[in-house]
Image (cartoon, rainbow, N blue to C red; front, side, top):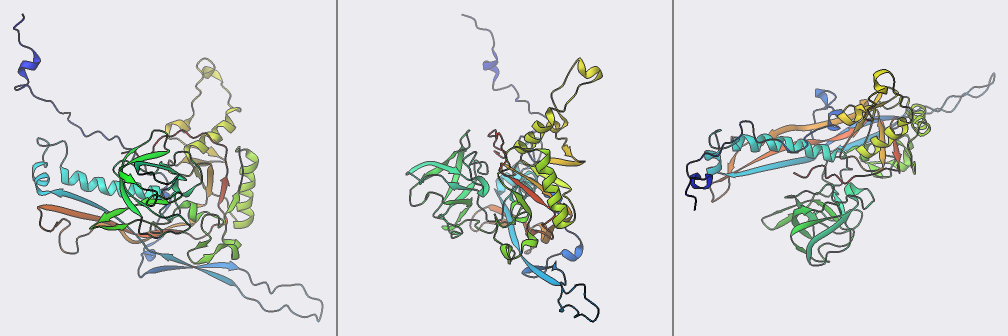
Length: 433
């Protein structure tokens, strides 16, 4: 029998060598759409409960040609509409024991300073959630329950982000996320029937596994699922509490019938043009969309955006026109700049990919009229003189980061929506960290 030394014999004296530059980022932190929303000026700083915008919506129609000694036209006036933008409050929190705060400060003790890493990470995570909210209507709906609960931990879901369809219904649900499961209907109570934590998301995106079972009474068919919280036995969701996003801003009343107090059906001038049942993208429908915006609103969109699957359909449209010349004849490359985060273009305008955008839609937006209303730009709560506050009775500290404000659009009729596109969706969970 061999008596030589093996690695196993030296485990007690051998070092474990750590990499110098970890932890290596695995999460997609790209912010693509939110950058189009800007605070127009310091005068747009929010003060008060509601921000009011005035819109010029109609001409003086008291104009006509008259005969000699004829009657001059009846007097009329300019018409105006009003938008009343509500404030929205987004929070994030971090909590850690004093032992972690003291013991994980240096490279020798850990890969990263725990406190700094948690604080900077939370700021980034709130920005990522704002990117997600930019592609929803503000009602907080992440998805719907697809079939009532059956006293198991599996929850079947569909209608991701409030858009009909079973494909990847769980695209906005993530492991570790706390969700509220509400009643069904147009606007359920913000007090959910149950609050659960997501354990895992199915690879096909049709279901999640929760930390505990839900009954048929708790998870009703077509019940809303929102970001939830259970604090001190008080259950809350996020129904109609999130800032409004593009599907609610660039709309014809399909997604939101009453927009910031304005009834859209009674005010068609404040509609975006929606083309339904488009199926395949072609140059004709793109030209019609631009013409509608130009005819109705006086300009064409400078930003075209949609999910990656819509981007690929535009690529399919132009593929037949590809030609190889010179050296490319010897080594043809089927790829495009669009596959390298470079954007495809239509009449010189980029067609941007947006991973949180709804499936089957493409948006053309004049982003000059998008607006970000800011009440609190983003700050750590420190009114009592310290960012970290002690949890009562424990050597644990909490901190809260917050952003107050909302999004808006000052002119809708120079933007358009292509709805009902024929697309191929690959279920790639965009935010599974």
